[in-house]
View 1 (cartoon, rainbow, N blue to C red):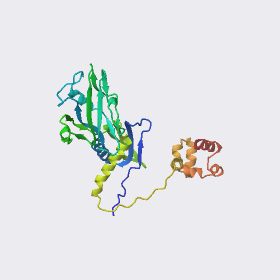
View 2: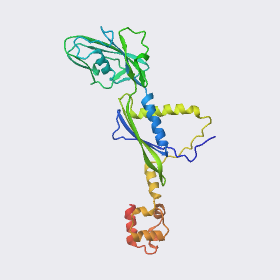
View 3: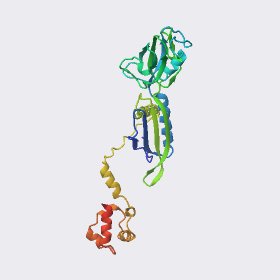
View 4: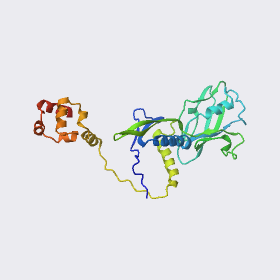
Length: 309
């Protein structure tokens, strides 16, 4: 049986609630042993960028078009440029299906945006204002697209669409809903020692997953991959009784030294002579007991009462 005795484990994970949204999150976790913050931060960052599932367009079919090096009459952009725009559409695919089809049908002069994509309720367009193409004269545009779930980056030749129409053009796809991640390490205190790490991480998503859920999924992936290396049974950690915040604050204050009370020199020296070192020891004394202390008068007593209140 092995236990990591003496190794400080993180007990705090906090998300910045003030600036938290479905697109942005900032977390702080700790304390970690020196160097562990970088190890954990880098592992989470790699998993977040490579392994969080998302949805993307993997193939496109234009009515009357057989390859990407073509143009559509009445449309400003050529097919290649339209495909580049479609690759920027952020999608969220819910439900059990791993693949769906979406469509664009347009004929009116003007800009066609991502919000004009027709899809079933399982597909949500996350950036609806993204321009796709521009119609400058009367025409009809029909586009069929295949949307799939996936992870990371997948090149066009790996989408397996051989059974589709020859007009279906495969496109490389970036499935990750994570757009950007940064992290850094700060010093944090454990007891009287500041030689510990606090991990501070910021991440931005396209809205396909919340930052909090993304971190949870990444941590689960890391945990699952590490499990194979453990060849012994782990001892369950003792359950620590929970203390509410108010009680914890009182306990913390009771443990403080009287030096932290910012007393006058006379009052502090009186407490020192009485061998009173902590606030807990001080509050146990009655007024009568304190007034019996040498050189300790009513003025010092009132000063201490005022500060403690």
